[in-house]
Length: 95
Image (cartoon, rainbow, N blue to C red; front, side, top):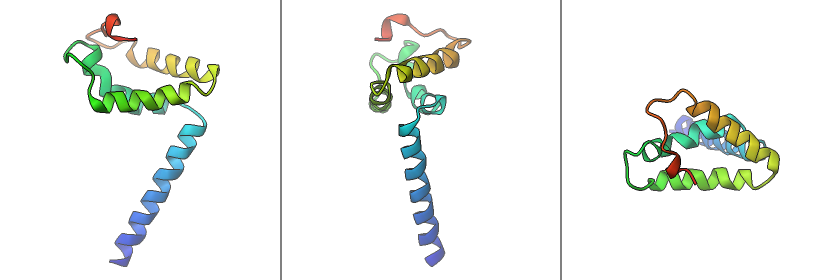
């Protein structure tokens, strides 16, 4: 039992540190984790984005608003992620 509590405590602490560092310095990893929740909507398979998609995009928007450099970095990450994607995203769904 004690081992499980220590492991749970360690994992919680680890995830908090990873999330905090991700918020401090944006990286493509944030996009690669967040953006896939929106792909089905962006490809036209769903009429509206899922709640998970909206929540993840709100997080990315918060990071993007911290500096102009963050905006460019996140956009570059998204562009590189979807560049060769098939089927193509529907541009009308990206706002």
